[in-house]
Length: 88
Image (cartoon, rainbow, N blue to C red; front, side, top):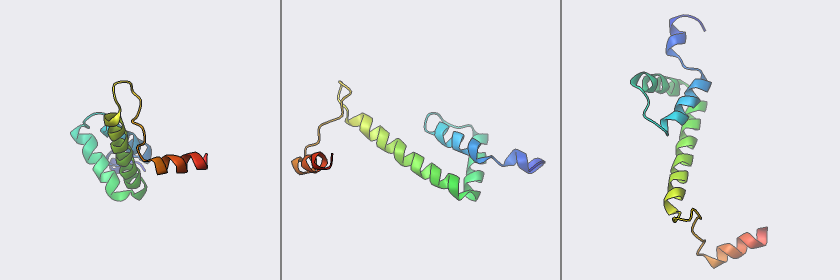
């Protein structure tokens, strides 16, 4: 697509880059507007943004649950431990 609409419409590749960048730093006003426009038209990128947000939240929670050694906390449920071991 050529012309003025090309300036206003992001590619899916650029949109996914902005979605990932959004979790690291604040987007500029122009980037936020262009991304919002793209997400309003693209179901695939909307799903990607939703999944990306879920993963970011899980990573953030995981980092909060680690102690100073960097090792995640032990599973406290013995039944769950046994089921995991049985499936290995």
